[in-house]
Length: 364
Ligand SMILES: Cc1ncc(COP(=O)(O)O)c(C=O)c1O
Image 1 (cartoon, rainbow, N blue to C red):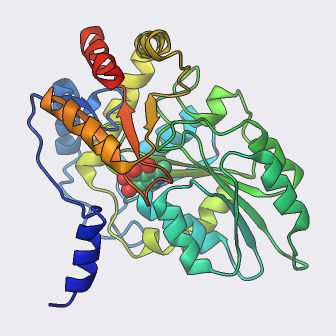
Image 2 (cartoon, rainbow, N blue to C red; image 1 turned 135 degrees about the vertical axis):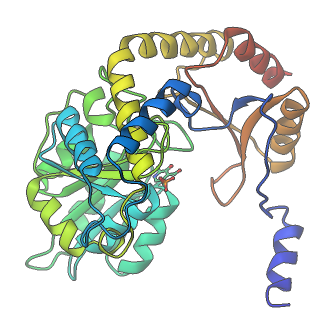
């Protein structure tokens, strides 16, 4: 068989992955369903009606052929206006969006500086642009500055910096300083807001909203529709200039079918829901963070609670104990993270008694 050796090594290291269907009765602390919109029946109905009224079951082709529809345009306009960016372009997924950005923006002679804990899609994308990639220490603006200072640039080198708004594994919020560094160095700043859009900021819009950072021509925001927004797909917000370039150069945008019509409609409906209910959502999430603060004396940055373990066996045992008690969490192993972690995600739907049950078991 072709991969017997590789599979047996993975089995031996206990890092063979499996996909499973979990019972609906589990108390779910594993999903990125931050606002519980994945189960909102009213959104489903509204999105169905919206997609049906527009008479578009499927996009049929790439956006650059004839797959671009009024629904796509509506969602792009909505995202640009709430985030106060000049322009927006939809992409099939967050994974594709990172490939699109890195591969198209980083041309010969340019250098990209990327946080060492950036998402796997960005890390994979760096393989497409080798020689021009510098990793800096996680969320460390001083290390980035040192590396920016000592890099060797060509006459026309562009500088690109890539960070996440909320880091998917640790739950840390990226430091505010990165935005200013990008301006000082006239660098393009990519902020992957997969886990920050819909979860942080006065208007639940993410990193820029959280720090009240005014928009700038150099900023690019990559967001996903699959997490807080309860749908599927992704978007890239930027200046008109960069948007024009991406739609002509970014391969995952040009050579891939446009975003599914229903997912586009669902994202539109859910974004409106979040805008309408943002105060209630913020209040509930704040009260959940207060429970964790009280139980563990930890101030959570975001809705992600990352619990580190010295060894994998202990972490897996804890995940199993939780599972026996009907609680589902993410059991994250190396090499996804440097140390094994339990990744616990709090959502708008969680009840106080369930969080307390989780805390009690975690402390056991
Ligand atoms: C930080 C980050 N960026 C990008 C992605 C990929 O997004 P998608 O699931 O839409 O492909 C993820 C997915 O989990 C993520 O956590």
